Length: 144
Image 1: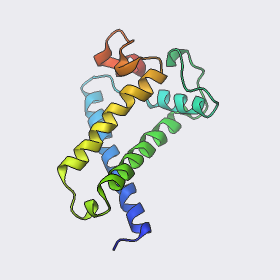
Image 2 (image 1 turned 90 degrees about the vertical axis):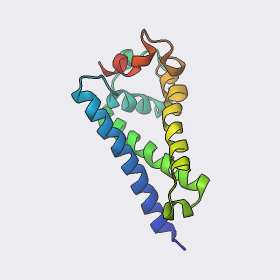
Image 3 (image 1 turned 30 degrees about the horizontal axis):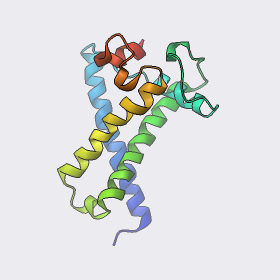
């Protein structure tokens, strides 16, 4: 039986690893001149959450906060670890001994869906960035 410390370590490793894979993809996109996420805006949003404000009218108009880029990156990785914890919680600790594709891809899809219905509406982009000029290019509008 796996102990709590080992389970925690493995969950953190899975979360950080999965998030790093996403970051590699974002780096490839950036090198291809495809606009990607601006983690400073995520940090700005989170910083204002701690000040009691969840929803904003456009992140470009929201007052910057000290350390927002670092906060954004830390949030990005913390969310990755939280989704890994969700994966192990739902599918069991045994999944780590014998990982299968379906549980991982199911939680992976949730990592894509959650920002569409939580983060983007809170940043005044609408559900699935429906309030932006080009919903399929949401990142572009917030990367500038």
